[in-house]
Length: 120
Image 1 (cartoon, helix red, strand yellow):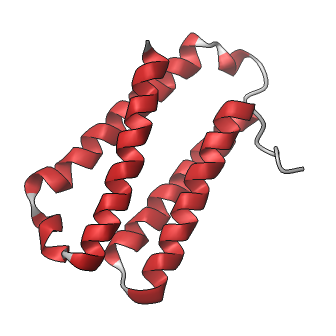
Image 2: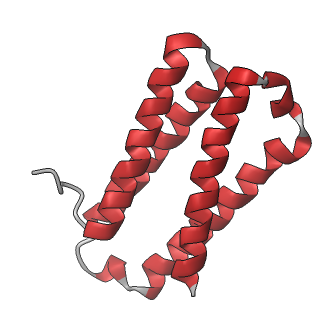
């Protein structure tokens, strides 16, 4: 059940990120609406809570857990690049957007494979 909610929050998180980048490009004034500012923080908090719950329920910290650390580092990259994508303009916005999406994909692949170096 927790995994189901985690997957829902993942979809909501990436959808809200893409939507906010779109709004930043096309209708930046809408980003000032309270629900657009607060909503993603609520979703991402619930996403983190369900993620940590899955880690502890699965007892993944008792074995090899380098992949979890890799996901956390990639998450920090996703957050940083996402902030740049929403707040900047022009080419930098789209480079940061692409980088954030790459971090997101990496996190997903590592979550499924449990291997931080799946590309080797």
